[in-house]
Image (cartoon, rainbow, N blue to C red):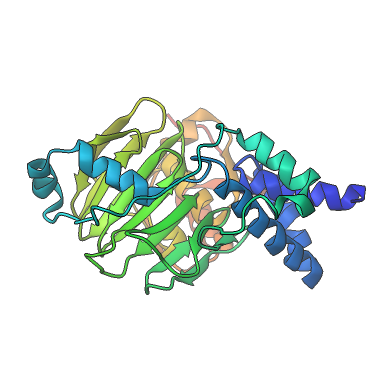
Length: 345
């Protein structure tokens, strides 16, 4: 393996292990799209990665087994009250795993890079094959095998099987996505985001795993979803339409509130509404929708307010309205834009 091959294999492994940076995602995406052989190599290494992960206990979330553990920990009466329906699992069927020593993910990566030919002898049977979709610059829409529709925002990724097997429909998300889950009461749909789990039967909701403060955000449009931590299933929280959950990754805290962010899907719909909105909040929305770096020069401009509605308009068109309405200047600077103007008190 020459230096270039090892470099891109390292990038693929970093991506699969969740350690890649946004800049490296762009490099890897450009390389994969530049030649069919690169795309085939990405697929090959990804398949090998998941096979290696399957030999390591708990390296990949086993959500079917987690749900069995959850059902045994939570009082049945509480489950019925929170979920309004009980998922009946087969009593005699359990997931069997070999009693391996708990290898680390770094050892798995080493096996993948240094011993790809030999690794195939470790195990003849593998878990369900999975597809990994990584979005670099543009929003992407997917339809899963059960009919569930997913819209991924730029910079996000989704791992899912070609066909759902077992008791659950399991996917893993990094970034932002809108889910329209096909209804199937006998096979709940479960999203893994680090140690957070989001479970639905047939609903529409938004998930963001990269909010400030290392929190996860879930906003429900219709139906209901259950949110809980994999290690703390007894703290399950149920969201109803119009509610929002903020989930802290480290301290097992789930805060539920009414969703007041009318622009939470603006990145998908390109429909933006500002109603006496401070410029600081306006900039946050524009950065999310247009994936641009926008800086406000001077603290006194942050509280300038604007009321306007934009429907599928370009960033240039939005800037034109802001410039005229707020009497500010918006100029390109490096890889982004700077908003400046007269001081206001």
